[in-house]
Length: 334
Length: 304
Image (tube, rainbow over all chains, first blue to last red; front, side, top):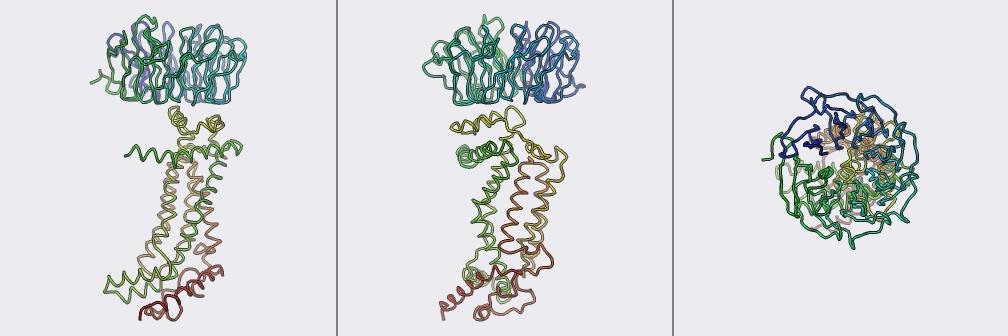
């Protein structure tokens, strides 16, 4: 998560790091040595104006003050937190592996409501027009009200739903372990496309879109470009990365950047799916690729399993590594 | 090379095992415990010929112990002759010491595969679920749709080790059933060193498995218990309760049997598997008769 001049990221050492966006210098980290261990951070942090929220694998959601970097509050849940939290209208929402979706007062950490599903929630919720959309491993995609957590609709797929929905233009786009990618009416939960798109393996990541085309990776190793209105493939053939796609792709002005589980990154033409250039991070990339919030430049931030966080500029299709921070040694990469 | 071995392992052992477990899970009411139990029965049926061979070999070995003992006494100072004559004795009686180890070696990849299969089929962490996606066959869509699997069975979470859930019963059952298997299959040996080894194995294997079952997923311990119970059943039908019940006389001829030269024993038609060797069961008598016939045939073929 990049905001203002800071990149917030959860490290493999289970620490929330705030890095200087320009040079990758560590500004602060959480927890401090005297605090408890988060046991792991799977999701991306979320932010309000004053706080950063991060869910720990220890089952606790933490709010950390962005100015003085101390814990503002914590909310223990009954099971692991895997999906990212989301903030909307002074409410922070997060799912747990107990299948519970919690909505908390963002400033005080007091529970507003909770919604129970049948299995683990690893999907990050998305808020769109006061409705919370999320998936559960109980095979359902849910839409619940933001103010009181009342179910509006649920859509049942034939497989677990671990991916985070993409919500835009009144539609919810989401993939499932049944290898299908669905477009649902955000108000009713009814399928929009005549048939869901089918890949050769599960959908794990969130899709991204430029408004007309949906770009989504599958664990079959392919990046698919689908027409947002019809679900038909836009490219003649999907772009094959050769290994499962676990990280959400990112859009940059030059095209789509996608990473596979082997650590290869590919810059692909958004129009025809042809490879522009490829790069190797030399280790697995499992966190989402993060573009600049303004989308006006070509800088991406990503986390690699070799304990590094990196920033790279893809301007004009060339790979320029801007900085690299080693989270294990807490120093710039050697 | 390692990549190639890994590929072969995944394609031939792990992949079929994981898909079989999930397939059984789907058809057995989404119950992973039942899936493991039925899987165990299938594995034991597939390896039944080897198991039977092992039991018969072990029994055959025990029955010629007096002859081995006699040879050891006769060639106490001539190791080369002892070795040659012992091998000839094994050949004559159609036994092979290595034949006893075959099923154990066959089971090793199954144990390792099942251990990996359970870990990968019941992943606790999200990243391990990604690994499972690469193991499931795409042409079995309902297998993919069954994920994630419910790991609860009776009082157990099959994905967790008994130590993680304060369960002492399952490891105890593993140790007890393994001890019973060892006790049933071990036959008293005329050789003091062999007897000592048997005694050590009787306790070492159960203790080792008990220790491992504390650390490893409960699903594997469930497999061990089921597998041991089946082994006990097979063993019972072939040899009876063996040494498990103290009231029954088992094993080969008493060690106090007079040591005679091998040739004399063979010529007498007493190969050590006569009534003295009976385990209180008549099931082994046809086998004894066959061996006598073989002994007779060999006697005729002996060079003069």
